[in-house]
Length: 104
Figure 1: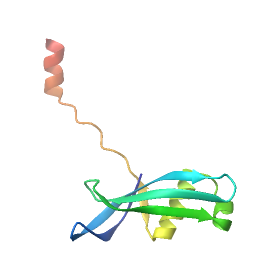
Figure 2: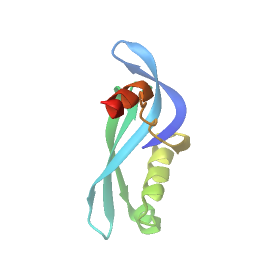
Figure 3: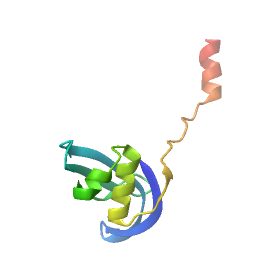
Figure 4: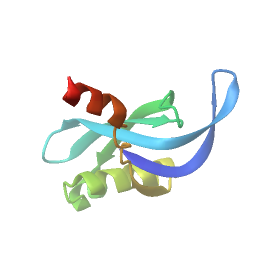
């Protein structure tokens, strides 16, 4: 998943900012065509938009088969600016509870 420069999308009767971009490959015939599904999500990971992108012809031939290359291609098609990789927050550890468990 990638972070993107926020874009405004109409969803659920209001304008919301998409800040996350995720995609996965659905089909690749290893010769001429690849199909990707994408989703755009807000800060709370609610889905704002989704769809399908097909890569064919010279775009497919020039693709280096990498995940990064697929993301860059889809971002270009969707007119998105990727700002980085999504890094999930570290889990919060309750040190007091941990100390209580160790003492028991």
